[in-house]
Length: 420
Image (cartoon, rainbow, N blue to C red; front, side, top):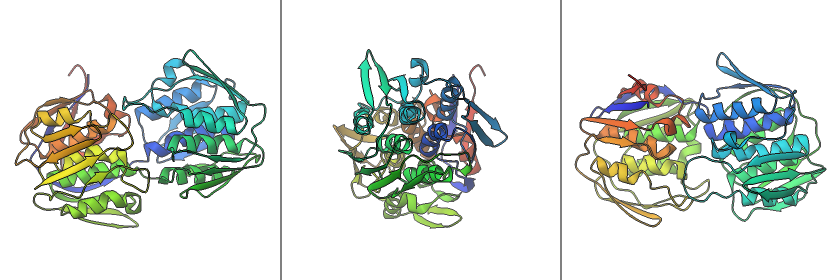
């Protein structure tokens, strides 16, 4: 099994280009089904979850393959409306294919999705919203059997601003009749990116980035060439890496506006963070200061995906920082692994209290989930000695090549492949 070997203690310096956004490209890949045509995606990251999406598209009869740095998808030959249980279990985001298949085929059959074990992440909101648009959904033995002779636009009010439900409803509504208004919609930048992709294909979607999204259904879509937005969580990871180890880095392509809650806290901790149209510069000198309580919340609040890496960054800070996780129940699975490196963290329910320590030390640790794995890399950069990180298949789900990127910033990190 592949591992990462990190030799800590060195400051970071240099530049890295931020990959395309994982949480943006996955719904866009599902949206290609609506085009029924050739789509070329530029800046698409090469990730395990992208590979899983490619396999799903291919299983549906579509063509999807890399052409150099471009991912080319042609969904004209779609001939199936079912996704196997094996493919669905590979990633949580596989549920996003439901709305697109239903809109294109009038029916869809799939099982419940897999992904990181972060606690209950039901797709009840997805199903309720699709039923509001006229879908009939039968749940049987862990499988969903969905039919929709005709989807009709209407107002759908989400009880919470679920990203996945918002995306699924946007896709389904494009294939419906009339106007759909999604109220209490998620406001994440990735939702805006999905809107811009759909509109590039000929859809009429507006309001993304606000809490009310309008979709005018019934328009024939077509292929396009589209560049995926930069990954704000990858950018947050490398900002936290610089905060952890100290240094002076530049993240080319990163959008500081997408990360304002993260950068505000890093500034509070003593880092200098500035952004412009080219990217983000981060300079961190000396030990960090403790920050005000960090509470995860839907965008534009602090992102749950950045909680673990920021926690790793403040392990050697002066004082106490409190984290409150309000999105997922099991988002602290990385804490026990950080404790192996000397971290002082106490967890009670949704609260984690981090008391800064003088030093961290390298240790053998294992990834428990995608962002928890990235947090181990962040902590290892500040630890004395070598840290061996195993089960990095989790990291590969969201980072194209975290070792390569961190080496670009001066880190001493290598990937040791299985069998070597």
